[in-house]
Length: 78
Image 1: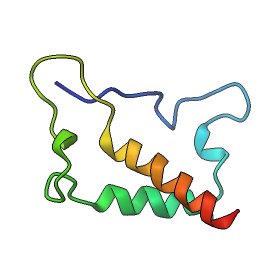
Image 2 (image 1 turned 135 degrees about the horizontal axis):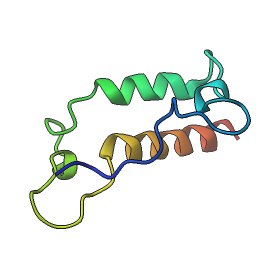
Image 3 (image 1 turned 45 degrees about the vertical axis):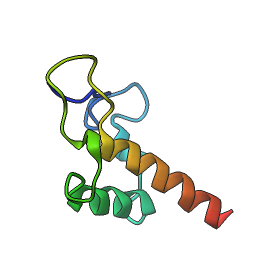
Image 4 (image 1 turned 90 degrees about the vertical axis):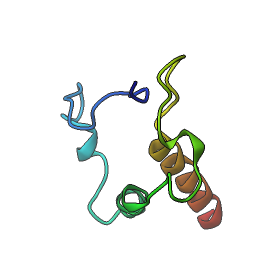
């Protein structure tokens, strides 16, 4: 069983053409995405990093960690 997923970032939208066009190359979101993507979450003790075979799939833990990290970053900047 796989994690729950949202829209693909490269999927075209009405304005602008894709989500990637909203985020500049220098935006901290890109750093957070690369950093969290490089982590071994199962090795760090995240129990939901591997999906179970039964039940409703959880949200992708890497995406949740991205959102929480971005929220904390924005609170520190504000």
